[in-house]
Image (cartoon, rainbow over all chains, first blue to last red; front, side, top):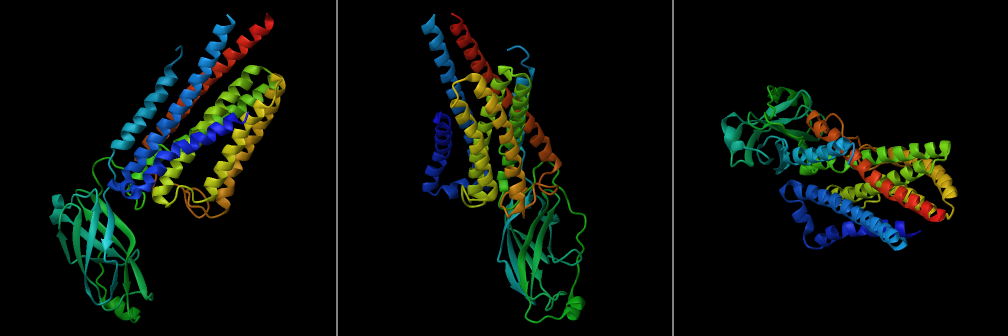
Length: 73
Length: 354
């Protein structure tokens, strides 16, 4: 299944997207203000988003299994 | 939620690393000095910009030096405190320097009882028109740098360019350490599978690999964000970044491989062997190849890792718990994935039974 790798790539780009969008508008000035503190914020937010995306895929797997079991009973 | 204690510990350690890692202030530093180039024989004025400094609170006890080497240093003749963040230093440079270099770099040191000592390494350059070491020696009024203070409160090291992003050590680096722990567990489970052919071990190996890849991708993304603001680009085609991406692709192929087999036993056997080889390639990709060439990344070639200068004991108190916390959290995620797959397999077996 190429789905897994495809998913991994979309996840990767999706995670970077908000930061690349920020980049378009004087992002460096903002990211580097306050002693570059927002870089740390962005890193923590990225980790959180990544874990949430992972949990969503897990949720889907469980729901699929649930549906299968209900259908067969 | 039987035996949930380690999950609680994992989450608590991550919360601890977030709170302490974000709230502890940085040490006082010098973020800028201007101008930076001077000529010998002048009375010079340097405007210093402090970081996390409180110059007005100890304005009478401030001391400043221009340090040439381990022996020679000039003391500031006058220190004017403009505000908490700005100082104006006056130095009288002799006509000759006790060095045979035409251009000599000086390290600026500012010491205050409240903030501790702050340095700007090699940031000031003095040019001498003619070189005369003997006159330089006789004209030089050496000032000894003694009794430097340390900031009293708990703090993290100040580094130019890095600034507050030094805190990413608690969020970016532990992901890699935890990823390694997860991949090692997956490899061990694969070996267990090949010894016993018990499908449970194979399912566990797949679960740990899956979370390991999540951590790897997060590590790459957080690294890219950090790199953008310290190296200048998200992706510098640095050897460490490239090799890590290759390593992640090798692990991603593990799931492609798994999906290409219909027969569960064949799938389990071949993917167990592949997992062991994937781990065997990860070590040289992440830790050997980057050391062979120049890299921007600390710990790779031409660039030392966070050593005694950067990773001090205060940082270790947050860094190590963060690694344990993320490893435990990853194990928790992996057990969830394992539970889903094993339930599915068991259910499918039951269906076949009917």
